[in-house]
Image 1 (cartoon, rainbow over the protein chains, first blue to last red):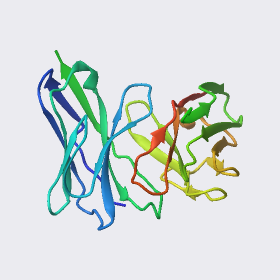
Image 2: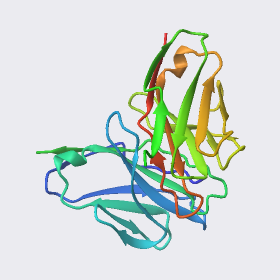
Image 3: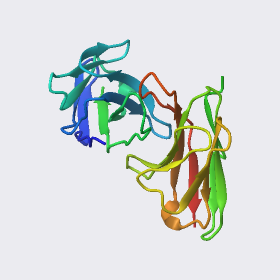
Amino acid sequence: LAKTTQPISMDSYEGQEVNITCSHNNIATNDYITWYQQFPSQGPRFIIQGYKTKVTNEVASLFIPADRKSSTLSLPRVSLSDTAVYYCLVGDRGGNTGKLIFGQGTTLQVKP
Amino acid sequence: NAGVTQTPKFRVLKTGQSMTLLCAQDMNHEYMYWYRQDPGMGLRLIHYSVGEGTTAKGEVPDGYNVSRLKKQNFLLGLESAAPSQTSVYFCASRRLAGGQEQYFGPGTRLTVT
């Protein structure tokens, strides 16, 4: 399974755009990239998933370059409630192995 | 739909005691997972299952056993609890197809003294 590397922590201010980058140099052809958000004392929550180029939903965008060795989660105009830990995962979309490994995550602190 | 539920929510064990954590999902998902999360750390995969009657080891399986006798349930057992197993345990499930979106339960906070 591709190992992921993220910054341990990031700070931002309300209203700013936040970009969190994840490195996954050993990503396989069949692997998809998924991001989760976790608040204290809660289980992680799915944010977004992609394979290549750009994916956007109502809460975030995911940018994946052509070589797919990294990905960037973009959170537009963050608020205090976006303070959380963000995890990047890489795994087989088809789920043949089923195994999904979390990395250390990035703790995002949004300040007023 | 209740989604993913975990029983119990809290538990305190003495070293050497045994217990079983129950995870139930009502979404007809094929895959189920058990993770542990220590304070200030990320989630570590203990065991997972790709279908009823199947289980597989994750990153940190030692000291734990699992069973998936019914599709909707995934049990995590501690045969002889140790203080190192003090953690929050999360269960998750996901569909066979359609990506890596996992649905997580609320967690079980376990303390071993």
